[in-house]
Length: 314
Image 1 (spheres, rainbow, N blue to C red):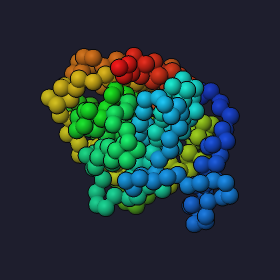
Image 2 (cartoon, rainbow, N blue to C red):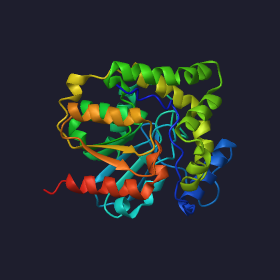
Image 3 (cartoon, rainbow, N blue to C red):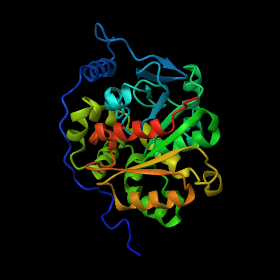
C-alpha cells in the first residue's frame, strides 16, 4: 500500500487566479487594524455585531435559505464566498468568527469540539434560524460534523471541506500526528506565530500572497489568531471519531477536496464515503487546502448546486 504521506505535510504549489480587492474586504481590514491598535473603528465602519460571544456577518439573499460558514485557522477565509453571485444571489449567508478568533470572545477554559458546535447552534438560535446548510472547513469540518450529530434538526445539509477527520483510520491519524507534532511543540514552547507560519507554508508555500489576493489583511489576522488555532488543533486531536454514530448520518453531505491537497486528504474522503454512502463529492481544480480562498468562484458554484439539490421546496 502506498503511503499517502509520501509527499510530507506540504501540498503542491498551485497558481491562484488574481482577484481585485473588494471594498467590503478593505473596510474589514481597516476595522481590524484599528482594533489591533486599540483605536475606535474608522468613520463609516461599524463593528461586526456579536451574539453568544461570536462576531458575525450576514449577507446574500435575505429571503434565501440560511448557510452557516464555519472557518478554520483563517478567520476571514470565507469572506470571498459572501459576494460570489452563485451563493449570494440565492442564499442567506452567515459567516462568523469562532471563539478566540478576531473579536469574538475567548473560551472560559479549554476549547473543545462540542463547545464550538454548541456556539454555532447558539448563534443560529439567536438569529432565529431553525435550520441551515452548514459548511465546515478543515478543523471546523469536525465541528460542523459534531453539530450535525448533536442537533440534526438544525442542519439541512452538511458540507465538509477537507475536514480534519484523519482519526477515521488509526494509521492515518498517526501519520498526521507525526507531521504536525513539531509545530505543536513549537506552539507549546511559546512561539504560536512561528508555528502558524510553518503550518501555513505546509499548506501553500506562497500562502501569504495567495490569501491576500482574495482576503486583504487575511495573513496578518491568521497570525494574530495563531494561539486560538493551536488550541483548536489540540481539541481536534482529542476528538474521537465515532464510526457508529457518524454512520447514522441521514442528511445530505457534500465532501470537497482540492486537486493540490496532500494525497492523504483524498484517501480520507474515500473512506468517509464507505461510512456515509449518501455523501456526494466535489474536487476543486487548482485548489490547495485553502479551497475557498484559492478558487472562490468554483467553490461557490459547487456549494450552490449542492444546496439547490437539497433545498426545502415545501
